[in-house]
Image (cartoon, rainbow, N blue to C red):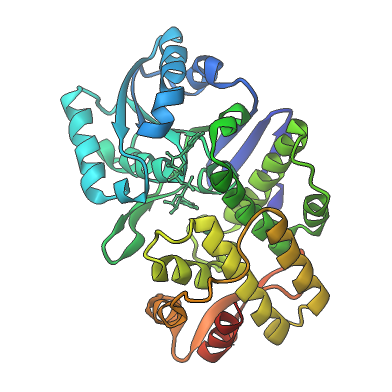
Length: 366
Ligand SMILES: NC(=O)c1ccc[n+]([C@@H]2O[C@H](COP(=O)([O-])OP(=O)(O)OC[C@H]3O[C@@H](n4cnc5c(N)ncnc54)[C@H](O)[C@@H]3O)[C@@H](O)[C@H]2O)c1
Ligand SMILES: [Zn+2]
């Protein structure tokens, strides 16, 4: 489906993938009134709200009340926060509780939380009774602009992240910007790594907007989230199942980023922070292999720093482990790596020209 697959109406953004369009509701104060829009999409009564402890403590009551008042019958399942909960074992335990609670094929799943909850709740929705509807209520900036869009769901295994999963598009996504007020600053900032990535690969104008960013304005944040949903969904719409290479453009900064996450045992850096470092490395490689100008490279690094994101590795960080992790990455084929480069801000392409030595050099400079 082409780039005109998206239609934007006020705070309701219609996202179309394949045959099933779905909406993203974007605004403030939405949590108290989600019952009615959910009712527009779903007729069944029983549902499960899957959330983590941090998020449930602040928002679960509101969501539950709102659904109950629209005639739904929600059960709440709370799991521990953090990536360690995104496992097959946890997904299986959730399914067991849903079966015990009498949820059947006529039920649906509400994922209330950040990307971790979005991924595991979506995976449960994809496999429960061979697939039931999924509603996403992202509560982190990263989840709003990235993980809640595109239908990738899944869990981690000991061998790596997101190795088990399914494509399962949500029926509705509800982005209430008010929830971001309780998000710790570091978590908020990491969302900007994906936003800056979107700007670099496809939107030079948004890049300029970010250079002039004034954190205070709520309407500006709403416009920014909306723009990022449009960018991600347009790219995904061209390649929903990640087959043609178009969707792979979203991996800009991620080859090295993932390797840094892995080398830091998933504890040293948040995903967005590792991606920020990965973007810096991808820019160095783009200067060498795609003609990115030194000025634009410096502007990208500056922008990442403006949002409190790391652009240098700590001196003692085990750089060799990063190379080992890149080697381990499935994208590494016969001496060269499929790598996303940017020739200038606002554009990206995939190349097979990048060598492991290029990556080694870029990592050394970090
Ligand atoms: N499916 C996709 O396309 C896709 C894309 C990118 C990332 N992801 C996945 O997303 C996950 C990362 O998501 P994340 O960064 O949102 O992490 P997260 O879901 O782990 O949330 C980060 C932390 O913030 C807390 N939190 C969440 N919302 C809060 C709020 N409003 N107020 C206070 N605390 C809050 C959580 O409890 C958690 O401790 C990873 O598992 C990654 O693999 C998936
Ligand atoms: Zn990412």
